[in-house]
Image 1 (cartoon, rainbow, N blue to C red):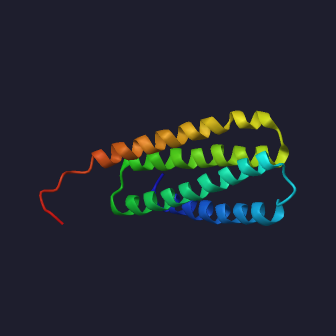
Image 2: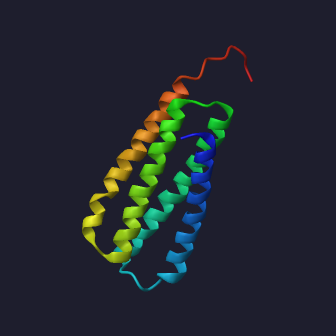
Length: 130
């Protein structure tokens, strides 16, 4: 993903993480079984963390466009949708089979983080000390 698109996704992800968190805290309080509420809250937590990751990736892409960072952004986005989205759907519907999607999102995030490591390792070494 390009910097502009990554920034857009980060903005939507951050906004929606706060909205889902508020909905869970206020709209779902007392309506969901405790284990479903825990799944929902886990989705929100990881959603918000990875929204910030996408924001950082967008900034990095603006400074130094890189295909590995672009790929990392794509996998981070996929992970957010699959992981958090499946937990939201599981919590709201009670359909346990949706939990089978969650690990696919987790693997997407792992790939995204690995691609971020590749991008970081490709930064030229600097002889200057800052």
